[in-house]
Length: 248
Image (cartoon, rainbow, N blue to C red; front, side, top):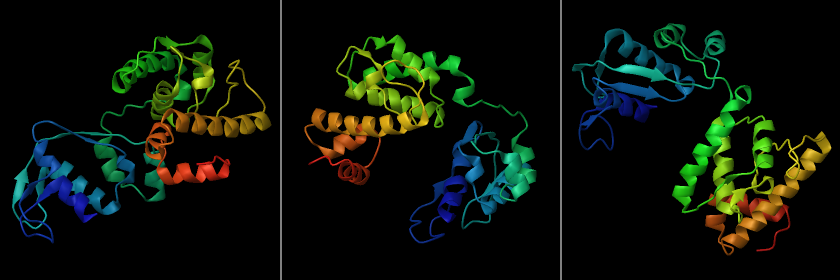
């Protein structure tokens, strides 16, 4: 928490162990501009009180200093939490909530705006074609149907991860349903249609095993590259290989 405070407000040389020089905090660096707080709902109550003071007084004090520094910064904050409920639960300050929510912008989850999925998919295709040195032509109708029918509990980040993984592993010119893997699969990878709960669980397990084998083959058994392409760490990959009986 003390390091986070130093990141926000800066510190003076010698203010704590390791403070070998005076450092500008994020508020000073953003002076005259905009500071973005991602996942503001995870900030501790102690830091919340300090943020409230900054917003009210428009000034900061570096860690280890008594000198007041005036600032003029626009704050944009984002969260995936229900801050009103957090206020009721006592985990988020009510006065800070109202200071921050002058102009609230609510972005519905991806499952409630599925018309965005084709646009986002094409954007990620272009992005990861360049990043991965690929030249995929697009995505098939069945694969797009599968993406649209899925509820995306991980929202846009999960969609992005699924598209990047497909681009890395596919051997086709376009992404097909068989190239898609995402957790909680709710559509048939061949037809794009729904299925019952028993079939979904069985298919997800089989699909994950298949993708691990496919990725290991693609990267010649290199576990680091395989794990990275699947979006997991090496330890998780080893555990999954053991669980699925995949011989090293």
